Structures are given as structure tokens and as C-alpha cells.
Image (cartoon, rainbow, N blue to C red):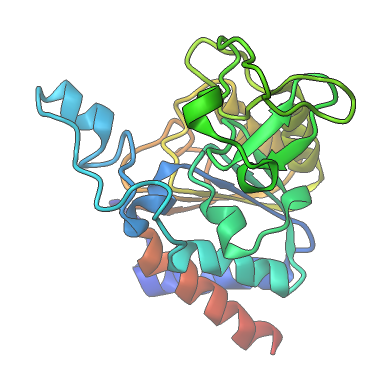
Length: 253
């Protein structure tokens, strides 16, 4: 992007901000998973970008179940290991953050997770393998599907369904409330791989900015919050986030 310092200077600045931060919140979108072979939506070769050009969807290099965390996911995990990650908010359903090692209680997955089910009664989360969930018998567990004979139930008696948020469904209240809360508490908010056009999730970074946090955006392509970002990267996530986290170690030791 024009008028910006060079990449190395911006990485150094971001690393200094990370070193000086006490409560970092990271907000990820589909862009963080493209290096794992999972297509994004609004990137240069994204699903919606290609649709708008009259092109077919991009081919997935791997199935979402086979995808593995990449260096961007692992850099965020490193922030957690260094004790600086206050919370992680994700718009992704691909399970890659949990696969990387982020604890379940440190992440709000705003659109759910293909590997997790949830109870409609108490909102408890379950891993599909722990339930022995059989899609051939019970389907994917979407809210619109009727429960089938033998389908597992929660200890509270509630119906267990997919945690994935379908088009037309409302955002999960608990995850949105947690996201707003941690945004107000943080001193550094990092957007990684999101075009910030999906509402109401795109309101969360502005909550952090209004509360006084610095805002870093790492995303290929423009976002509506570029003008309020304190540091902006249009480069690939792998070019920016891992070296920034590594540089942070030089400032702290």
C-alpha cells in the first residue's frame, strides 16, 4: 500500500508493540488458512472474488478435515506460549486453531467449528469423535434437522447439534459477548486474514480501537478499517506474522 514504511520497518514496529503489550487479542478470518490449502472468500482468488468475475470456485488443495495448521496459526500459538495472547476470535470453521494447540477456553469461533457439536440447552461443546457422531445415521446435526433415533444427548437433556452457523442463523450470543468483552480489555488488537466485511463480527475491532487499543491489520486486499489501523500489511500472512513474533523475542529476550 502506498505511503507506508517498508515491510521490515513495519514488522519491527509491530514486534515492538507486541513486546510492550499486556493483553493481545487476535481476530482471524479465512485468509489465515489459505496456506493450509483452504480457500478464502474475498482474497485475490477467493470464492466470492471468483464468483463476481464469473469464474468457478477455486479448487481446495485438501479437504477441510485433512488441512493442517500453517506458520500463521503456529505464530499465534507462540504468542499464547509466551503468555501474551489474551484471547483469539475467529470467523473460521476449519478447526485449525484448535488443531494448532490453542485451548478451547481461549477462543471464540463466531461461525462455529466443523469438528465440534454443541448443546442447544446448556451450550456445552463436544468433539465429534468423543461423541462417536455418525453422520450416516444422524446427518450433520444442523438445527433444521430432526433428531434421529439413538442420536446422543447432552447430560442436561438438551439436543446436540452442529456448532457451525448456517446462512440465515443468528451469531452465537456467547461468542459475540466474549469477543466484545475481550476487545474492550485489550491493548493490542490484531486482525489476521479478514476483509472485515461480515457483520456483526466486523464491529469487534472498532470496539478495541474505541477503548484505546492499537490496531494491526494483516490482510491481502482492502478492509473498511484500513483508515483507522495503526499498522497495515497487505503482504501475505506468512511473510509478516511469523517474523514479527520472532522479532518480538529479540525485544524481550
